[in-house]
Image (cartoon, rainbow, N blue to C red):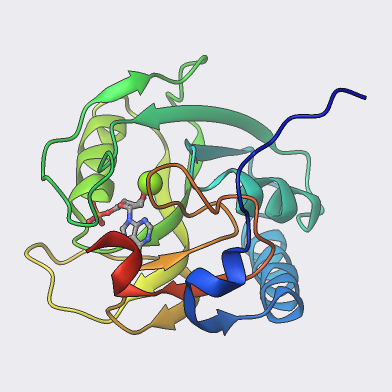
Length: 188
Ligand code: IMP
Ligand code: MG
């Protein structure tokens, strides 16, 4: 095994607090999977992962769904190293397959301003899917410009910048199995 010095790595020191522990997340993901399984009986479902943030949630969620689903992946531009939404959204990777006539469930890590989700919904809706719904692990408690419906919500959380379980700050912390509130001193 090669030895690489990754610098000092003590993510717990960068957290104000742990918002959601690993077990709490896993339990809620299991419940979401059961709800989706109940709601999509006998309907061909395509689950769409919004890369990169939703990836850990997505791989846990699909295994909690007891249906013959298909999976697909999109990537959209993110904040970069900022903690504020730029409002500028574009596709970096599109779906591999058409969704015409299919029931689609978009799987997102977090809905903050809702700008990203609105853009994805507007775009996918033009492709004549049978339905498009949204499963968001986290929904931030804040005012949103558009009225956005998140059909399956994992957790309602306070308006703080959080990382872990896919969520990043400047590409870091995605590999934590818990979700923590990042100390403002880390990004200020
Ligand atoms: P929105 O467009 O403002 O709803 O933001 C959506 C995207 O911003 C999410 O998919 C995340 O990638 C990122 N984001 C928003 N809030 C946070 C946060 O608290 N931590 C990490 N990423 C976030
Ligand atoms: Mg992101």
